[in-house]
Length: 236
Image (cartoon, rainbow, N blue to C red):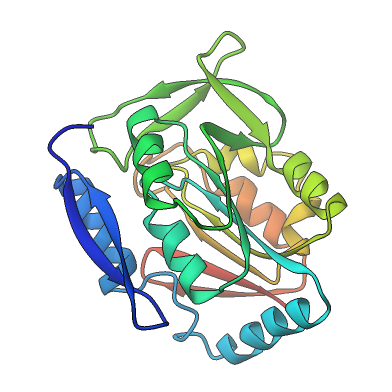
């Protein structure tokens, strides 16, 4: 990785850690969204205190809260979530290799499980597509002979639960891949007290990429809060 830039991210203990980026429009946009605008902060939610209490209850019970970061990009969201919820175990999925290398560097020492893969309803393979939106805009297309692994999120959550992890947050920003992800095997959704997702009908007009998510979420007793680019779905 050449021509990398470095910033420092403050931690809750008063120290800081280095964070690497490429200085591109996409990387700078990610940093602004997550660390300046605090897109994933639950402080803006009226039920934020309730979610913190849920997190604390999980840890008091001797379990480790499980966080899913689907579309982890260069690791800003994983770092933010690790700072906000210390002790949580974050499973990160990022299919693009240069993003994944930065993700590895930026999450060194954190309680993370990193996968250079996409997520979907079933295991399979996909091709990676670059529509020209920058490093935060890569898309995937299902292809049995594709170069990239597609991991079933349902399977991953089931495996993590079997290891004793307790679902807490699922954050999903997969550039339209939510259409396939929510097409089946979605019981995992209501396992998570909080689901944060960016939908992409705005990016892929006429494709109906949010339809399967809306069908899925309507089956469960959950609140639906729209803030900025993200939907916060909170279990009732």
